[in-house]
Image (tube, rainbow, N blue to C red; front, side):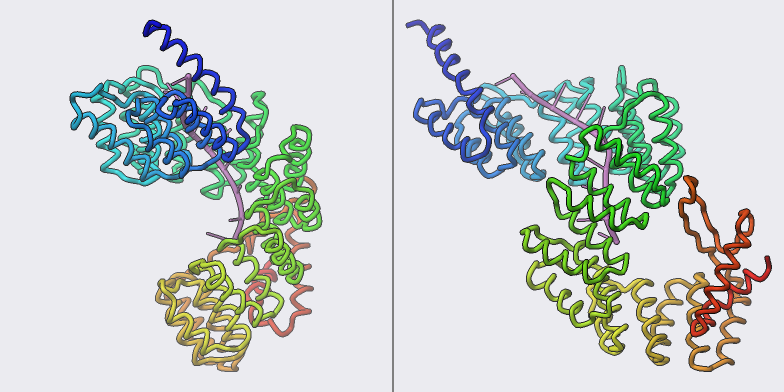
Length: 545
DNA sequence: CTAGGGTTAG
């Protein structure tokens, strides 16, 4: 039998494994196929191993992939690429780069062997891993390798470089790669747009967006995300509408991107339309779409609608549970929120730090101090979550509101991070409830040190003095505000009324119904005689109109 | 035999 015939037969044998590996429904099935591969002496076949590595990639089993790869004595560029791809796709970025380095080392150390050069299928993943790790000097080194291996005009590689530099916040080099491209495609433009969006520089993003010749749905979505990131939700909605006007049908990702804007603006009608649209197009199978819809309904005040959508979801992840738990807590339904958390544990979904923020705030709102303190321990001891500053905020809230002000102060001093203004604010308002001037002064000192320009802090201090009947101190604080020339930052909120999103800025009388609003507010205030001090300024403002 | 971009909870 000639060599050519033998090669043909081996190839034939290898090909038979392609459908077998492709049809594997999980890693255990792949292991069975692997057993056959070994039995037929094909465990060194780069072709078959590459197919199996792709399968590991699909099911996210990095360990098995590593095992498969490490037993090949002579990997070729296909198997190297497959293992790097698997590692990058499964967030093992450091390992991906280690394997890449092995290709380069091999070239130096085994010059007698068949050389292996990284190619256009290697670099996009290596560059991606490098950008996730934010490893700048390595990124520049790899950029050099791209030149060395003659890939500086491969568009996928160049686009990966653009993406990498924008992730580093290095728009200069991103532009440089872009300008050197012979024909930048949509991905290249989108890379730059997203780079500016990430930095919150939406004017620059907008210039590129208007200028680019080949806008895709990804470009529109990048703009929506960017506007949401800097809080320009109205602009995000505008872009979404314009996208539809030019005839682009929203997909799952763009729906997920625009719904937070609806939630923040209270644009319920748009949100409802997206819900219907998602139903028509089968998007409700997508957990992310449902998660953002639940969030939107909760933020727009439709907690029952949020709950029924949550109940109907085909698959709930940790975000779904956290959103619903937090939504219930924000609606004052503390017991329902805590119950749902217990259901989540029964459903064997592991909560994370954000889940506990919802639970803790529910406990605070319901006055379940001890329950809340218990959960603070549960998150640390049972789930090994390192509390972040927001969790300490909840802890200070729980201790403070239950009147344990010394313990709250003690907890703050034991925080592993520097307490910020929100922490001191929380303590301060607890001092006000429990009329503790001593600790209030401590909190106030820290607060004014951090935010000397924030007028609200002085108002809060004045209110505490007022509640304690120290009228002289009250007028001293007011004088202080005036002498420092501190301006009040106007409060602002938005709500949808008859399909139009209305923005309210405190003290603003330009709306046709401002009079009614202020009048209603006054009625409400009259019912709140105990908090007269706090509302004093509001009434003062209102009476001008 | 293989490749790249946009997405959700505080």
